Image: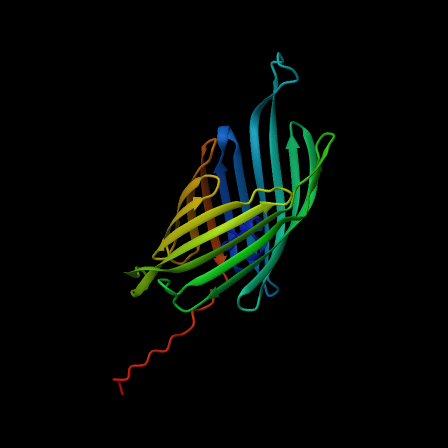
Length: 288
């Protein structure tokens, strides 16, 4: 996601991806283990200066039984975290984009509340090239982001907590798949395949995490996705022929449960154009 995301969810994954998001609204809901939920809503608006974004996400869990002692019958409490984000990104030349986001994190665990402020920064690179090996019209993408460059600080009870910085990076390549007669243009068009790999590391920890992703887009309308990191994920997405409306679903097989993620997107303004593949000159010596 760090290298390919170009929609309002870039506020979380990589703020540099806002530069190619155009004007869009995205809503996302994720059903989590034992009644917990995750929700996101985001908006991007392009301008002459660059692309502005704003969004909010919430992680919520209710009906938690809190006990002061083993024999205490307990009382019901809730736990929630909300993150309100504003971001900006700008294209730099034909291939680069840079962006940042400012976050206000609000936490409430059983009535203990606090707010902290943080900031993320990211960059993204995208470029097409000549056909290489079996890759037709390849489009190469790379991204990097520093999460919590300005680290939020929370104090819910007695001990303060500073969220750690996290480094994320990713590279991907998209290329031509099978050829089909286009349903809406009446011409031959090729499907697109994407392969990607991502790495992440929390500063101060030895673990280096890796994720793998792949997708196949048919007729620029139907997309099948696979993902592998701490668990396995399968997804399918559909968008209208004009690219304005999109709906996505993913099933994530996590250690505790299988999570269902639903996403809706409406694009009211086209995103920045993808750099065109370099022209290829073909000469036929038998033709005068």
